[in-house]
Length: 113
Image (cartoon, rainbow, N blue to C red; front, side, top):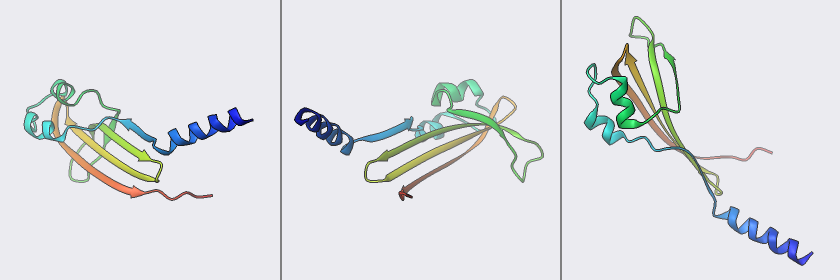
């Protein structure tokens, strides 16, 4: 019984300092310094940012057709219920990089019981 309590205490101590990370931080400085709109290719984006976490198609209201969209994300959450999300969307016109959308947020999560 005492051994079980010690194991439980050790696990709770480890969890208390735990941070969960998903994805990798997008390198927005490299994006701005190494990629050029309508010049850089998908291969250039892969070289600079690495493989995306996902991809799809995006329809933007001021463009006549859809755009291939890659997304990069990074999520960090800790035991204090604090979360940070960083997301980078990369848009392509055919094989050429045509622009990006970058956003970040820090929120305190609420536990719903």
